[in-house]
Amino acid sequence: MALLINDNCTACDACKPVCPNEAIAVGDPVYVINASRCTECVGAEDEPQCQLVCPADCIDPDPACKESKDELMAKYHSLH
Ligand code: SF4
Ligand code: SF4
Image (tube, rainbow, N blue to C red; front, top):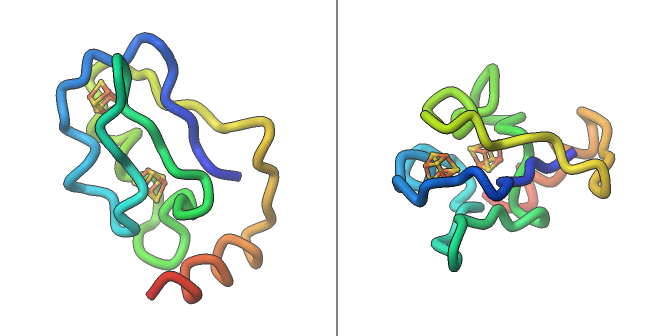
């Protein structure tokens, strides 16, 4: 499952540089996660790095993007 940034985002830019998949982009008004690049950090880290650093606690699972851990790992390998 990819993650989704909600409207509480303050555009602080903390999340973008920590994403191992370059999945986060500057949006207007809130930052945006590219679901085709987000692996929930599977393949790179033990937990989603964007959620760890977000001071606004505004990054949630995207219910429209349900993927198994194996699928997330395959996505990670296809990106790198
Ligand atoms: S969960 Fe990981 S891969 Fe997905 S957007 Fe956040 S930092 Fe990037
Ligand atoms: S860390 Fe959180 S508040 Fe900051 S830009 Fe990313 S999603 Fe928005």
